[in-house]
Image (cartoon, rainbow over all chains, first blue to last red; front, side):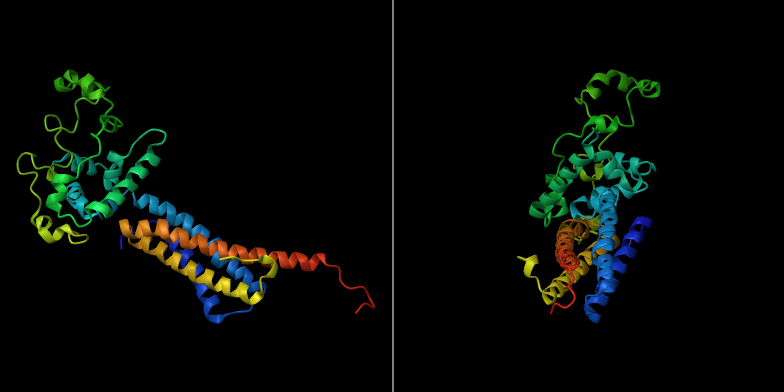
Length: 229
Length: 86
């Protein structure tokens, strides 16, 4: 059990209170008098509605956390690399920044803009669908070869923080030389020639052995769901 | 499930409430599971199946509540029999 947030505790308290009323109703079988009706209004109406509302918010927050992304076995190498304090991959370096922290997958991969959250969640549902229909039983080695981003990672996501406008950024000759290309998404910030892959552990052509999967993740049985955790 | 509010019997209303209570317990269980283990399985089950079961439970409760309110309003709108009437 992970550390529960105050909202999750409120939600559990509401659910347990509703459940207590419902169990009493089912076991004691009271007559349908005013007190029973009021109890049922609480147990079947008010408490579950608030419990569901708070749990939905918690569910939404949970889908932003790295633990959630890493619960699909094919994402375990990405999540493990992010959590590795000695990794020099972009993802890990960003995860060490408190602004990204445990939500570094979402912070970097979310679409931004007016409908960004909705579009990100729709994209996430597509991931879930593909996972259950295609990748659920795929060994990690095979998944590493086959799974890739549906479209190139947009520099606009990097530019949410690294605006490409600051003097410090422009002091780099490479940045100045590639400014137009970077802003037009023709050169990726996360390319081997620039800042390197975000998840070098998942790339077969990453340098310095960074692509080598840890032994416990490379085992064939780690390919099935849950085996790699 | 077709429910005719006009002819709903108290016994049947109680049965519907019991079914609603069982459904709500299942939905609440799924919800708490997703809070204790926020990984893909529990969260997705809670946000889809749990929501559907919970909504079904609430709809069943609302039907019985509507029936009960209707019965109550009928009772108060019918004037009491005048003195001397059987």
